[in-house]
Length: 262
Length: 146
Image (cartoon, rainbow over all chains, first blue to last red; front, side, top):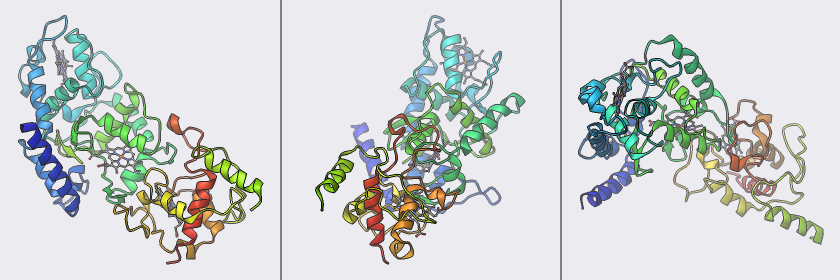
């Protein structure tokens, strides 16, 4: 019943958002960068800001349950090692990062899966699984409102540079680059859709089109499919490199996870 | 119409979207004067291709006099009047490979397979439109006289 009402509510809000003029929203006086949230209609922005209406919050709740649940051969929960949610404050704002004892960066989902395999001695969660997204949402939610703050680790520089190269190359049958849309044509309309600046401020996001929560990786795969490019494999380093580049580009912007997107 | 011509046209239509080139496009100046199929295109079919978001994709970037399509793009000039600004040959080159006119263009090369990277497997080696579809689009654009 509750689910049904939420569904209907979503449909109404969704329809309304199309009708609303694309909002001209207060942006910082000096910082001209716009979060994708600001490109949405007012109804969707309200949905995102209201924890009782934001469907992403259901995943945050589920993540909270998983956080306290023992798993794997180690029989330990996340909470057993990390304590309360407060221990995760600021973590999402500085990922991807290079875990201790390794030399390649992982994104937040990758870090959670490292704890699954190395610390809980359990199987890693499959990409886009409910559990992985819920835990990522739970962890990211603890940084909501904080500025994006990439770590000051010189070892990340070559990975970030490679991410920037990937951002600029044309690819796919349509022969387009990320930069052509998100740098050169941001704010313009691609068919009916305002092209956002592509800041990773809200991930994981609840996307109405998906009817579920999804990762930044899934969003990037959608953009690659849109230009008819072969998506990188789910475990490809390319996503982490693009994530590093995007987080650096969005440095100082406010994290809004879990955001809502049409 | 002579029978061989009809047969050739039928083959082109029967071929999957974006089959191998039927007639290698001959660029003369800023145009491809000759039809890629040796036949004139069909403007009504061309309009449907232009309007279709997963076949022509034109309205992702362009607007045009296609009132029933509410969501149109504004990344590029309106298609209205294209037929009075350009000859059929000029329009054909623009669709086949706009990079021949503007190396930095963002308009996809609709009838070129080389020079693109990391194409999705299901589209590999294929052109975005077939020769016959290009001709239909050209025929439609030529009718847009403002």
